Length: 478
Ligand code: ARG
Image (tube, rainbow, N blue to C red):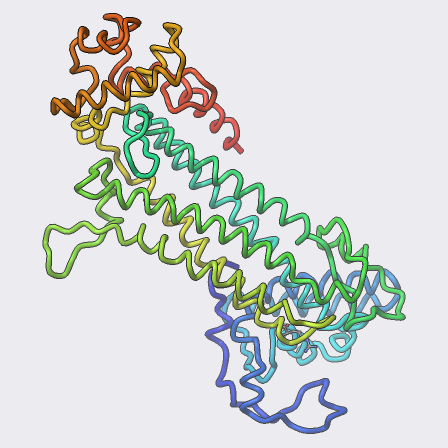
């Protein structure tokens, strides 16, 4: 599904058969203008729904037989015919052209061509309006399943990196200024948390996706005794929609999915930006495997993080599809309008980008090395142990605000004297600011000691890393 179907390559020239006329044109009795045919078609992109369309049709036909609207022999012929068409589509042997307008017409037309009369009975009690609404839901269901797997793969890569290289101390940042020391794995697992919420959002979206609109018909339902619940059950959908107007005009679930994709893209983009900084000479915190960087045509020394930049760069396009879908929907009166045909372009594009970015992100994570020596070289610059110093004073009974002030003045003293770390100050100088400071303060200072001292749940230190790794091993074992 994710890959472009071979059906596209089998598409003939859009104008080749223009003027042939369609099944629903019997009343109008006129061939269409070639330009109009080309303009209105969706086959060039909705061929990706072929599998889902056939799945829906098999369920529909089975239901029609169960309520006595289709004979056993007709059902058998339809199933066999659709099966063969699906195989031909998958092997690239199915030839259709855009005069068939969309995948629904192309498949049904082919079925009629192959099996005759029974094929003409398939469209009983349904319309393309509920058919397309069903197909895109089935596609979304499959897409969500793939996305959930890919997000988990990326989480697994991050957990592996955190377990193998996560114990090294490094600075954390707020306002991109050095803040408190943490262990490197704490960052990797921060992304795991974001991705976990992304999965939860997808799972929640799936609840609204996995509802069957089939049988809502063109707009008002049907007088035929169809059993919508039965068809839904055959499709593995736990419920059916309850209002035929809403069934064919609802694309909320697509907007939701586009939002969920946008959120994943945003998280990936933030991660990409972080690592783009980390692989610079200025940071030098990590190195990405050569296979995931590019060189420069002029500067022989270059190792550019193009893959990360593309992950960041594609985010805008994904957001764009969310805005496109919301805007496409906002002016539409009930119920089906042709505007909605464009929904597929948007969701396919957003999905393709995010799916590719997730795959690339996992590969990059698996080929990236933390550079502990480079980090360690300047680790204690930036007074990132100042908070721990203040907490040392709190444990001696000093009020935190007072402690904050004392340590602030010691940092100023260091800066005045050109010292880069609080531990470089003599004890007497410290004691001038507070008598509560004892010799043992040196045992608290320095990033390497700080990361071992964190106690609170979810903190950035060694103990918390162990707890978090155990959690992720549990969560991701499936
Ligand atoms: N190709 C159309 C779409 O994607 C299918 C539904 C067309 N229905 C109609 N009444 N014209 O939305």
